[in-house]
Image (cartoon, rainbow, N blue to C red; front, side):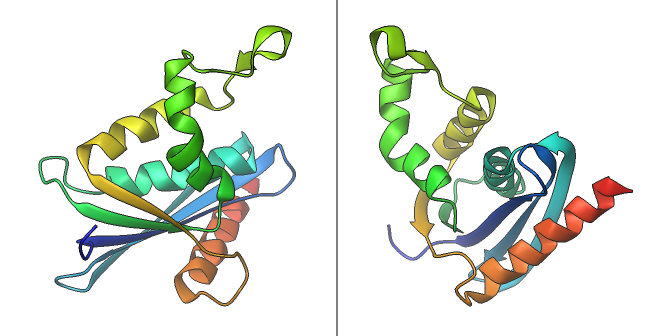
Length: 154
């Protein structure tokens, strides 16, 4: 990918797994340096669902009529591997993972399908960063996601 139009930083968090969860996204439109911050959560969810939701909501915040080059930066290996390694096989196998008696439906299939559709609207590259390693936007997304959990506890 050439230089991205948008940097999208995402994170999800959960207090208990399952339990109350939060997600956060920071979008930076590179040509204008405009920044948009989003967050939300759910009362009963999992960390993986919050990681996927952060990416979905970040991509939903883009103008649907304008195809963007997006670099999505996350500390979730689940999200990165799902979109860059596992997705083609899941689709080929009708959203089932494993073979024979070990075959089972892909977890969070509703979110994977939504994310896959959103990624077809834009040119998205996924980049993994180590969590809690001092990456400024990742740390801010973490704080935002944790704060979102608190809103659901009250």
